[in-house]
Amino acid sequence: MIFKYLVVVACLLMFNSCDYVRNTIGIGFSNVPMDTIVDYSTVDELPVFPKCTSLVDTTEKNRCFVNNLYNHFSESLLRKTFRISEGIHETVVVKIRIDKKGVVSLMSIESSHKVKEAIPTLENRIQETVVSLPKLFPALKRGIPVQTVFELPIVLELQ
Image 1 (cartoon, helix red, strand yellow):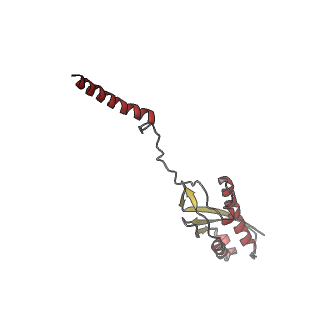
Image 2 (tube, one colour):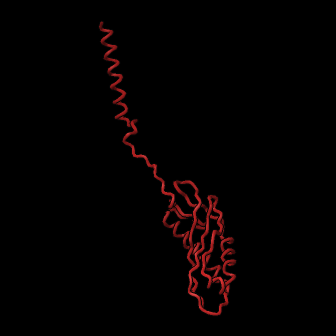
Image 3 (cartoon, helix red, strand yellow):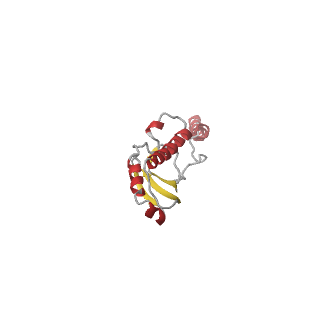
């Protein structure tokens, strides 16, 4: 008879102890917020030029990338002399893609008809500039390399 009571008490303790362990150790997942929404329009880190890899701070790496990209385009375009008959004050938008492996490619060049007529060699020069970019380290989203697209506005002020 005592044996039956001991079995009943042991069973009750066993079932209660499981709830105790789950509540104290934190095995229950009902209170854990899940991060299931991923924003695909942004990245955690922009692509990185090889000379910017020594920087630790993400903000500094991003600033280094943007500065080097604009410097590369401005230096390349300033090396070329363009002859025009009248002044131009236009903006050309260059879209480039940096894939998961860090390879840069030109997607499109958006310019006005006036720019295309006045500087027919501009598109070739921009293509050469994109091709001359070094292989980059790709952008990261949650630590995974991802493809990114950048729009670079290039302001032309030629007299």
